[in-house]
Image 1 (tube, rainbow, N blue to C red):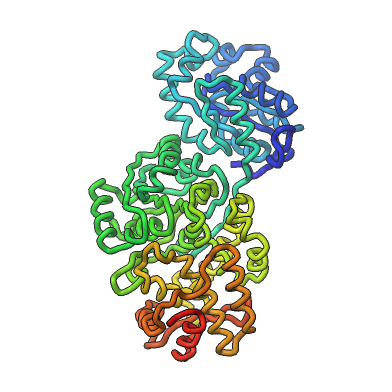
Image 2: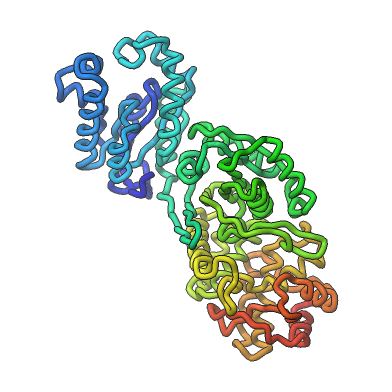
Length: 552
């Protein structure tokens, strides 16, 4: 997939200095759309088949008949490399061109690839009666197109952009392609290298449409079980299932109720039984599609079934995208507390499609934003300053800012996770990611882990408490906590405790899984970006912070 950019009239801000290559089966409309797109963008148009015929003096059918398909593919490879070696063009390719690995490398380096995806019915309507298609002259056109679709679809799915070529007019399809180019941006990849595994976190827009191709490259087999909730199933599951079909996956779906209530031992047991009922093999992958609850629940099931199945994450909430989908922590809650039962189980791939944030309620987006603020407060002062400048616009729907924030937060967490994969460092390490969480988990326990207080909202309040406690113990400036509170309030996040009992909150903290040798563990700070872990925290100082921040 290309990371190049292109600029032409009518496609502002997208893909500067790059060609556009249309791929797809015969009859997809590549030439018809390509000519119109080139005129719209004021670029030269080329058809690779026509160029081959011009150079060779033979028709494509004659080359197939006299020289064979291998010779034709060699000519095709040379022509495409030449056409893409100069100034930007719009190029319509033959149906088999993208199947050549060398040609794909050239296209990826020099162009933006657009797959015109069409159903067999649409294709048949366009090619029926045509005799200049060598491959169609070998038998029943419907059977041949079906076979070619099954063979080539998984490779076509690796295109940068996927547009459905329907029975609409070529003008309408051209308009759709131009709009897709205008809003497309190169994907960003953050690599996480661990001692026993490594994986990519891919961040961009429109990634659900090509998710099957990316998953096929990361998973050991093309069989998967998608675990999602009822809400996400309505909004995003159809696109993922279409992408899995395109890539040749055999796949099933399991849908659980939405919300924190699904992070329970009962729901986990039911999910495990449902997965086992599908008779998975050891290479069958579990794909979590949804927010943090789905990632935690499906990931724990993947870690447990057959003593460990391959796992991939496609997070659809901002909180999951910037935090819980990265790092391999999975688990469920118990009646004794949050995330007390679980396992470390790293994904093989994380796909973050920022388009999914368009359907996210603002309250949930704000809850996820708290984790971005947290990353800046832990070790990246520049990121926190960025949040104060851009946070409101990010939550207002600016997709470019959302992607920048996600990439920065993921890169930060990747550095922490790679240094301390299983949170075993005696000081600091991965435990720094718990800034505000000792407080937050107590707040969630007090409110029943429901919608009264979302996890990110609890973290937001916890961040203010952590800096108040740090100042109370003499570690940082007392003005920082009010500054953080003012920013959180400005973006619509809670920043004060809701009048809950200080004694009750302390009781929840003493059951926190981060307790060691009977001592509470806190992440404190010497300033913005200066977090550190500590077990030398007097209970009375914690009580004083709770009361100062609103506890009763």
